[in-house]
Length: 67
Image (cartoon, rainbow, N blue to C red; front, side, top):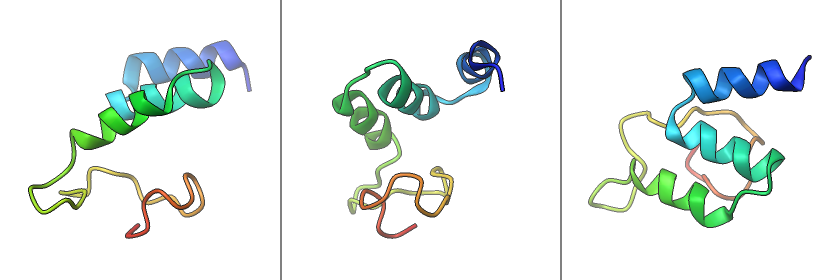
């Protein structure tokens, strides 16, 4: 797969969360940027709501134990 094409797809089609994850894993982005994007989906009770996070086992282990 062409990295540039994949990156362009993320920038053009990804939600802020996907873009922050891409930055973190491939461009030296910050963990805080990812956490800030996740907080946008947080409910008042502290959970992550409305099926906003994609449930991909093992993708980001230990961070989303309810997935």
